[in-house]
Amino acid sequence: MAKKISVSKNSNLLTPLVYFVYLFVIWSSYRMSFRFSETLEELYIKPVIWLLPLLYIVPKEKLKFSDLGITLKNLFPSMYLSLALGVGFAFLGLIANIAKYGGVNFGANIGSLLIGTSILISFMTAITEELVFRGYLLGIFLKKYNEGLSVAFTTILWTAIHAPVAFFIWKLSGLQLVFYLGLTFVYGLGASVLFIRTRNIIAPVFLHVLWEWPIILFR
Image (tube, rainbow, N blue to C red):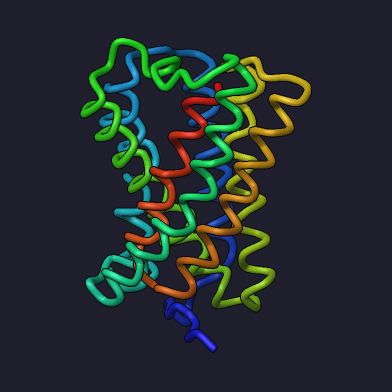
């Protein structure tokens, strides 16, 4: 059985829950009120809004880099596992792309961005979101609950924070909305289990990038 991710014995649930509410309210409000370029939002604005509080929370709770999965341990196994699991998400994205456009149209939602810029944005988004949900929140839940409940709580919060964008920004409805939220939930489960098994943030980061491209193609 995999060892539980270590977190401070003084950790409690109030801090992570307040942090999540902060993220949900502030990030959702920002997305519905302002619209800048994707490059500006994902490379600069999101890291500030999402990660700045962690600069206070992490030392306050006496967490180490390794508690957040920032380690070289299990680096290559993490990459192999995430790439293998990511094939399934890429396949779902291909099916969705064919269903939406009647064929393979990989440039449909990249817009005017260069492919290199799109990949950079994907990795930055993955690092930001995975540090919060897998590195911090999942680690705290694992201190209080068993693996099953911890994964479930993290995945529910993960899906919830992506819902406002789907409703109000992308205007998804019907089967599109069900497919998106379903894929988001399934990804959350896979990324959480993968992080528990590898205890390396690289695993969910790589998986996130492979998951995000089907979402880009789908929407």
